Image (tube, rainbow, N blue to C red; front, side):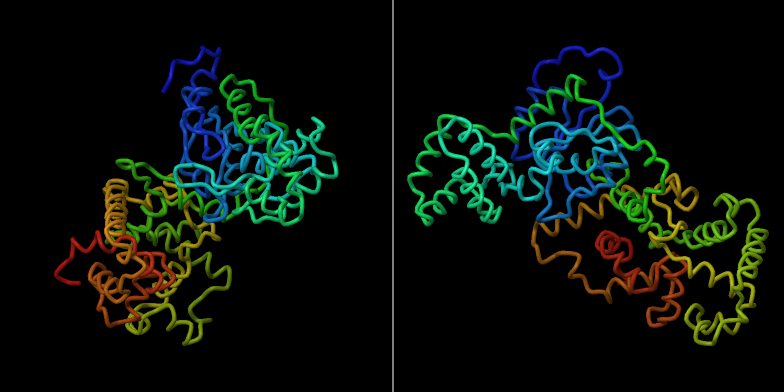
Length: 464
């Protein structure tokens, strides 16, 4: 990891510096500049939510993925800023996001960031490159070509018009194919071979990588706590900026690590929805408490009182079984429930089943803290989920055809029917059981269960 860095006075000596980088700057150079850095691959959607830094930490974003996978979202960065995390961006994806979020407190560093903020450049592909899995670049960033040509013009090697012409030829190339060799071919086609020969000889003697320069500047500033202070619109933190998407992303990506495997909260919740026989009772209390505007713990204090209050709240809002058509009642209730349950219990079941887990609804918890007693933390669910994920990964590595997307839904449905103690041929009962667990219907539960089916199969092999 290199020698110990010089001691930096105060709190900064105890923080962690996370660096997301790839083709712009190699890991060994990052360690030279920031010996204690935790180095991550180019950033993508979800990475910051998995990271879980603490207040005072610094996140330096240099490279990011965006073409083949969803890029890091703006509100993932806002979530860090709102929680006291210092976020620095430079060179590539970092410069682009900093130009978009500097008004909210993200810190931009370097020429590329300044070019974006000034309007000198405005396209994402200015910084885009194609690279190998281990970070070796296979193309050239347009911004690097721009700056090199600008330096050549300043040195009198080419004229301003020639500079602009060469930039335009490079800009027309798809970013995946953009390189100095490709630019040479463009020049040959355009009858500019001598111009390219002149600029190529000069740049060989004067190599310059503006993205690399900016990345090193940002890392040096981060390591010495000398990055400029961010400027922000202070009022944004008090606005309701956390949308249902942010809540869903947090649930989908953030969670504990089990033997090196991140287990998101959503996976823990889904596993208990599917396989914990006591989950429906907890979900019922959780939903009724939400309807009454109470803490979920109210379900344990006095269940009968909670149910009474929920019925009263529903009645005050015009919800009553007398107002349902036969079709509506049959949608939510099984034939047996319609004929044997009293109207009060029918209403309670309909209320619970209609409040399915939905990221657009505030009934939906996105963290263990929000879920409270909805999650039974005494169960080894995180370990079960981690092993399910590892099992799935092992099978795909062995044979790509073994993807969980190819699993037979009928087998999954049979597994769930066995676990839930429901007749697999009774579609109404299967849907009711799924809704009692917070799913939209039985088919929705089957799709969620794909990720856990293979691991769960060892528990009930004789019935599936």
